[in-house]
Structure formats: C-alpha cells, structure tokens
Image 1 (cartoon, one colour):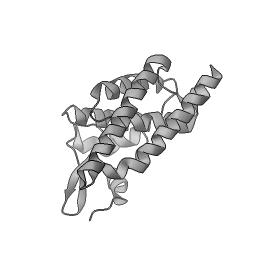
Image 2 (cartoon, helix red, strand yellow):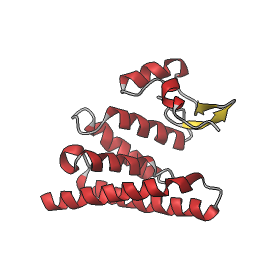
Image 3 (cartoon, helix red, strand yellow):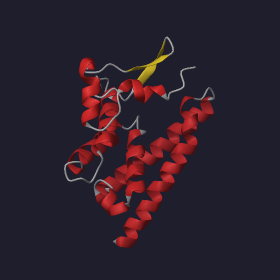
Image 4 (cartoon, rainbow, N blue to C red):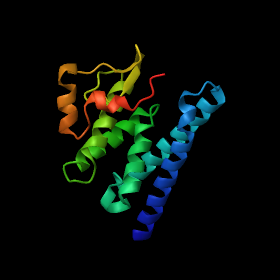
Length: 168
C-alpha cells in the first residue's frame, strides 16, 4: 500500500505539472491550444475520478502536501466534468473537519463548482472578467459579506487577491 501511495503521489504531482505547463492554452487565441487544454483536463479529471473511487480523497497525510494540492488543482480544472468536481467537493468537505484537506482549497473548489453549475458563488474566488481595468467576480450569494466569509477560510480580502492580477 505504501508503494501504491508513493506511485499515486508521483502521478498526481506529474499531472499537476503538466496542467501548469498547459494552462496558458486555456484562453489561447489558437483553437488547437484550447482543445489541447480541454483534452488534458478531461483526461486528468477522468483519472482523478478513478483515484477517488479507489482511495477516497488523496489527503496530505496519505500522499503528501504536494500531491494533495495537485489533486485539488486537477479537480479545480475539471470544469467540464461537474460529476468529478462535485465528488471532489464532497470528499474534501468530509476531509476538512478531520484536518485532511485545506479549508482555503475547499472554498475555491466550492466556488468553482457553484459557478460551473450556473449558481452564485460564496467567496468571490472566481473571476468573471475585467471591467474598467479591475477584475470582477462572478455574482456572489452575499457580496456584502464576501471578505468576511473569505477571512473565515483563510483567503485574503478580494482587493488584495486581485491586486496581483494583470488587468491589461
């Protein structure tokens, strides 16, 4: 089992590295780059679904911090596989109280899943676009409480969060 978990950790981190290399293609003007990104994230989403079926959530105490974060990133980018995002969200919701997953990452995945379902997000982590040079979040359930809710899960205030975004 330990060997299996070490191999799983290596696979997850390799998948996340490939994700990061390919992520520029997500919004490329080149349709072939966008298609390559979709294929990669779909393949990774399918594999994460298999992993969750066998191991449950790949928690840090089982696969290490880097691989656990990689699993979250893969779930976060499985935008066209709502079943995968919902399953990851469910497993992370169970893992957070046990200290086996990060509240911050769970909040990002919850917002991403809500937006992908066409619903309002909670924490304002998902950006809809740029207006007058400033990033604008997708609609939130309680926009007046957004920063308060962000603080509860360890996410910096929205203005700080978007300060590092390129607005050109």
